[in-house]
Image 1 (cartoon, rainbow, N blue to C red):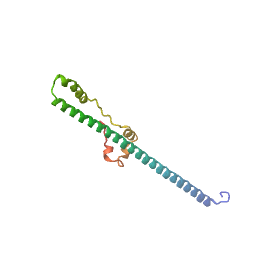
Image 2: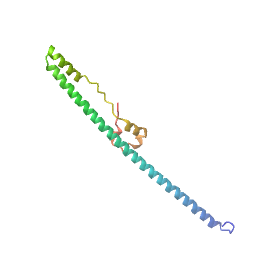
Image 3: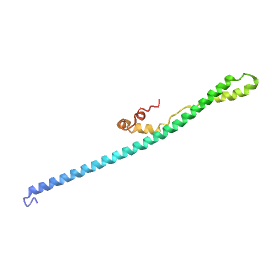
Image 4: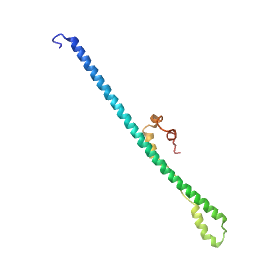
Length: 137
């Protein structure tokens, strides 16, 4: 076209090509953003599901600790009402054994730590406040 002195048509054609390339890039960027958003939402759902599972397991553990505490309280009451004699000495060891417990609670924090490492600050708006404020100290 340049040889035939059709520069205006050539410039118009070149401009059209540039516009098409820019539109293609913008579409590709939009698709990429959409995919990233979709991945982030999937990650959040999976992580929140894992946090829920961890909290339910922690609840079961704490319930067991509460039952052990109730058993210890009942054992202490039994010790207090029993007389201290030679015949009660054997049962005293049994009741004391039920009082002394070495239960240590260690919460399951793996899913929450993953969420924190991925940048919980960026997702605070979409998280329920109790989860965002969850602290293991």
